[in-house]
Length: 107
Image 1: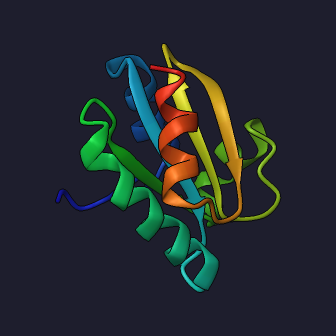
Image 2: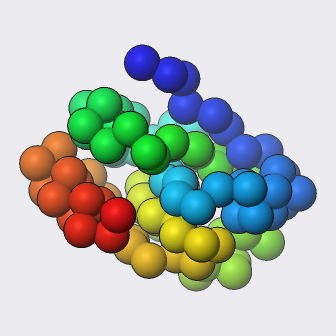
C-alpha cells in the first residue's frame, strides 16, 4: 500500500487541486490518536477504490490558510475533492464500510 503524502504548504495543495480529478485529504494533527485511527480506516478502503489517493494536511502555521478556507476547526476531518471542489466531508473516525459506500457514491 502507498504511503500517505503529507502536504506541507499551500502551493502543493493548489497543485493537487489542478492536477487531479479526485483525491482525498485527511486534515489531522501529529498528536491526535483519533486522526491515526481515521487514517488506518481510510487505508483499509483505498485498495477498493484505486482511483483515489490519500493526502494528509497536518495543522501548522504553514497551512493555516487551507484550514481557514475549508473551515476546519477540529480534526480528524476527511474531504473528498472532485474537479477542485470539496464534494464530501467526513467528521471524526468513520468505519471502513461507511467510508467505502460514502466515497464510492461520488465517483
